[in-house]
View 1 (tube, rainbow, N blue to C red):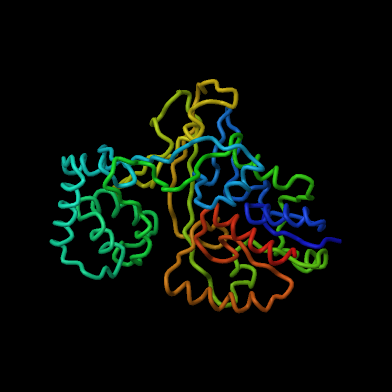
View 2: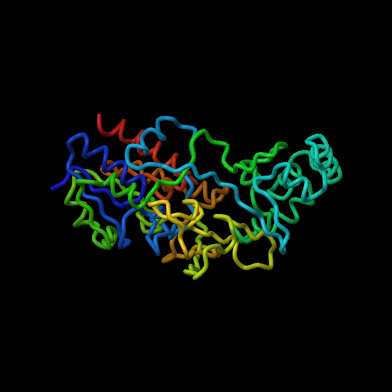
Length: 371
């Protein structure tokens, strides 16, 4: 009946579906959630586009990807500048001269560099063996203790001494007064929300939501020549080799009858006592205004709680340590034997992808598959 059955209506599945349709292929896209757009799904609440599965800020240095997404949505000029709250003390993120000034009272880049170097030398770390040692070597013990340790342990559910050093290496540290978190050429939020972007990608394609592929796999497989699977690769194989580990996130979302709750889109709570990792105030992704430029009288906030993933939960972040990497390699061997199935996306490839990387990966697959 179809050339391609695409399992999952997130970014990877939507891009593949769109490109296949452009090549004249017949496509059916299904998703077991009751909506499209996967984790980038946004829903309208009192004119506010709420990021239901956590904040998503599009950023990329890939001009091809930026040109591509702008075919399906207009993007605003939102710049991600989160704030860290440590027991009521507020610090600028990413770590920059505003952070160092608040932490130590230093006013020049040289003073900040000297303070970091002194704390690095005092710790005596030469080759960082874990996240704690890597963080201290990057920014010193003071910033590690206040702004990294508690947040990271809540995020990953493990002591920083048990986490690999590479997790923290991507953290921006700047001896400038630049508090743009993403050092990317292109950045913004799609006007009208991510759901509208994905709707435009899927225009003219048959889509069925609330449908579980794995519960009726044989019947679905018989409907198409090939399958594009963007769900968890270990679930596809019935966890036959064991369960890959993920971190999950739980959200508590409130509509508040006030115009401004925290004055910023994202505030991270970096102490270990506060149970949530951050609070998102969704209206500030679009400058507190509706699509007509009018100020919004109410606001929506979401508290995020990180948790260990268990079957039945939504998987968010692959735990890309050595143990899980070894297990995924074995699943990849199985996947490569599935000649009719393409595995893609963050879950299908068990990889921590940013949104632009998901789109780039989908376009590479399309270039190979749809020649």
